Image (cartoon, rainbow, N blue to C red; front, side, top):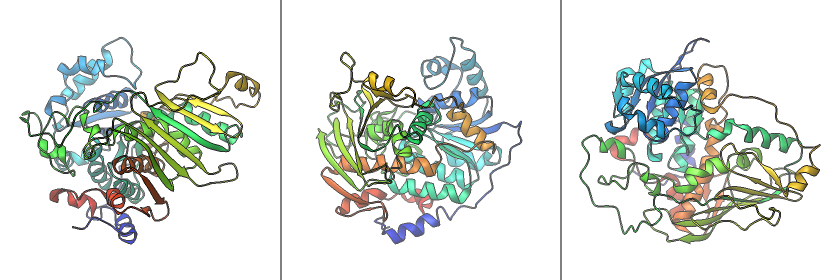
Length: 471
């Protein structure tokens, strides 16, 4: 099959997204009815999401699915759940973990999400998808086609075109869809929008965004794909590989290591970009870039992400107060952006965050829900009377999703919002793979100067038994 789609081919594919599947309406839930939720991916972030959703009191977790039986949430995993519980508000008590593990100990468990939907699809209202990036797309596509609401961890998918299809499917199937960039429901978006509306943030010309903490693949010496290792009996490896190119099992692919491989993940940019760039992208209305330049690649490798990279993204003007601007992305240890002259003496540069440069002001912020401050502090004090006070209260990200499933709210990071943000990061991933300068057309959504880059927009063809999800 030829997967080097033309723009015309791709528009046809998007309009007919997943036409093999029947469109089933989402179940209408009563005001006091809980959402019947299936958790797909129960390790690490999946386990945190499961606890978070459960603690809202709005969901019944009716099924759990993970290709590795050893990851199923059970009583004997209580200690691991407790130690892996960031992103949710927890007390010192074991009660939330005990309660969740006891409940999930008794729900149906699956290794293959397709079998789960076949057996109990009519009992599921929504799914929480927290699996490796390469498996986001088929699970979300099947769930939406069955009328299930979907919460999908970031980035939305493993390729630019998969994200495009998911955005089309969201419109087609009319379900609640939310990407798991949790800070999008916090104070940072409220502040950013209010500061834009008040004219505090305007005429932004440049942004430095950075994540300089160590990653799993840093220090790997990878001459090729690992040789096959003994497969643990608990893992359904064929389902784990899913749509992606098949490689024999290796421990270097699992337990979060997948993020370092181009075939299975999207590196630091795909992992942290949706958190750090979120409000910049949305409230400065950036859309997609016109040019991407690779400034630095440290230890580039055809199989895994570089140890460090510096990449610039150029954006056209959007309005009179939103002129042409660029973002420079830095990742890797000791690959920090230049220290702002405006940063007060004695203040250190964090390992993760953003510096926003406008004509008049410089802003410093972090990731997720971290709010901005104007630097230096004296300038922020001088503007005290003009700075809006944020008094609005809103639901957290999990609650927002579950209330959207019930028709009581709209998801804040819906795919039409989160999709272009994910695509921006995925364009950067292509640049990390190829290096050099890439000229991109946001209208045709194709590169103008690199055939290989256009092929990477779609990625390698899915394995034969997974092709139905792309038709």
